[in-house]
Image (tube, helix red, strand yellow):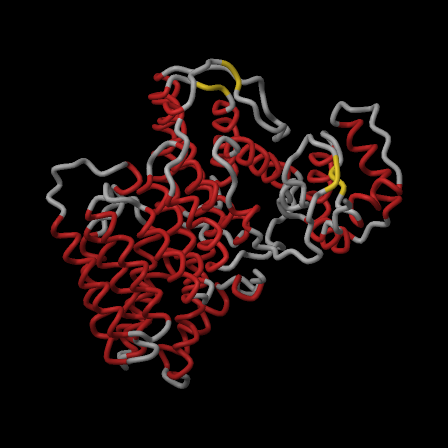
Length: 500
């Protein structure tokens, strides 16, 4: 029985613009550079990979992934190429003639493969960084495709380490990652140091945005992926998976912050897998909620709601009230984006009730400690400001919450403070108060140079659009001129990041 064409490989081959003979020569050259000089690929083999779905033996899938990553300027993994099982030759049985970019195989994978996926993806991402390439050319999976692919996976019990026979030594995994060292055991002191590094990276991201430390976070995550290739005692392995989940969320959030949207989405999915491998369902839900926030930011609130349903249902009964409150604020923002004011108000009311019901008798996980009362008000301000585009009567409520958030903000949260300024200025513009809008907009603009967050520019562009109704008003005309001069000339990410 012959398989069908490898549609994924064919699509990427078309984008790369190579001939089959040229790709064969590049494979041989790249393989030699990676320490496999014996490899001899020809045009007929390339044709079989594409036209009949034949899967080449290792290291060819990794070689092809490296070539396409460099050629296309974005991370391309062996799964992206349609090679689900690297290292096994043969024809792909039942291969489909047409495959969607959001194929579930690329979004969920069996327990035990997460470390290999993590290693390969971070290795490719680091290669892009080293060579000065950009990674914004891929397509995002839709929220519905993500939630459909991951629903059953997230709602079943993972095969945790303690459920399988214990054995020390490296875990069997497909070869992945090009900076990988030999797997070796680590102890609690090394894991404590890794956990502290996560806190440092998280604080930096909150203060300055994701642009300056993203590469360092991805590199640290790559190192942790190598550590996970060795099976440690159960209590250490769970902590190590927790570090991987936290770093993957940070890598995703930083990628989102600088406009690398498909890369960000992949890290959020990896984070959810890592959290589930470690038995931390609330962390898996929070990781998926990041993907939902990304969707709202990109103008896809309906897909964000799909993801939030999965995040909330998959988090488990052990999720703390404050975490559930945070999830509600994201859901409310999505509802506001769709103009569903009544639903948004109900959801924000639920968030407030959950937040005050948290007695604080259980120490929140490290990844929730930044969601405090200021963040609750900041998200409420954003939701009401967003709703005000549909119902201007919501603008005063947005102003009240933004003002409260700014009063409560502590030092080191500069990016969040900028968002509050923008929410306040935008709400003032909608409620016909240009003088106050001018004041808060200038506070935001004065702080912009201290961060490397593209998201702040995206929000500022939305505010700039609202100033259009006040053309001819001296203060606003001056503000518009300053904004036009300060804003980057590149188009918004909403135009640059294609969705499928």
